Length: 379
Ligand SMILES: Cc1ncc(COP(=O)(O)O)c(C=O)c1O
Image (cartoon, rainbow, N blue to C red; front, side, top):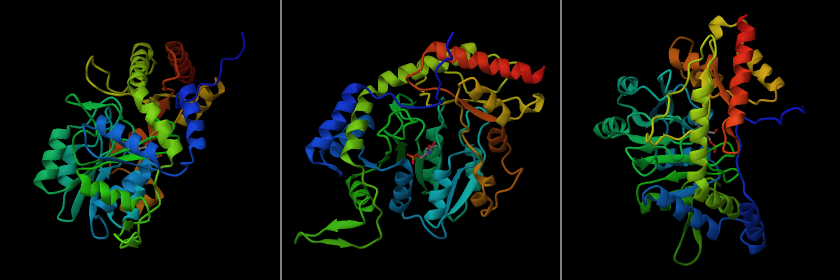
């Protein structure tokens, strides 16, 4: 029997029609932002319950622009979760604001709303949660809290395109919401991201912030009143993103079935901590499936576990390193022991392969390999 093909831990499904569509755009003469950007934004707006959506070159750019839109800067505090991707820490710091970390739930990994409430000070301007596949924080409570204290909310929804809160898509409710279209996400535009805003005035401001800060004057000249960035999405990327959005329901169904298979098949001894199990009709999406390894009882460390899977042709990831323990996070008071759940996740988490090109037998292969490696390490 030949070696099995390498199984990536994440990646996109791009069909031939999408690839052909890219050729059409290249021949159309619109290489920068053009009609496909508007079409993609219209479709995204439909997905987000009619709210205005603007696309940018990444979710990181979307978070940067969201912070500028909310006029958050020096002297302001932004409450965010210690268990998230570097984007949130980096962009808060780049805005000149101070990141204030809170811990998360060990299983759902969503930020702890009691801790958010306790962290609010007179300088707090915004709450920035990162949503996790498999469950959302209580968005009713989050927005009640924000409204009562007049705080902005910037939802980092990079991992949860297609998750629903009480039957409505993430993005269709709330304040500012950001999505990522990186190739590892639920849909891709290769690189790309989106920012959901509240009204036409905010949308116009985003258009300016993503394109040099330019405003157009009646005499057909331009002016700049604040330093904008250069984050406009090219039409080729918008064409891909538009095609991918149409396929999102299929991708979500496949991902959900694969996650369910992981829950059926994932039995290791000693046991791993698993994500929250999906319930029928719970409206959750599955961008990734990450477990916590029982490292305290194994004879190997996480690096060795990942290397052993890699040697079997199975890719893995780490989602994520604790932000407060990064060199940058430590400049804002981060140190060991402050956020036990985020720190344990950071030490023990492994992201296993999950993407819409996989089959149930791929999941079986990963589950068997993980169980073998853990059994051998424990023997
Ligand atoms: C949770 C989270 N937020 C934000 C981002 C940033 O996305 P992008 O690569 O589109 O900037 C990522 C990317 O991996 C992410 O995982």
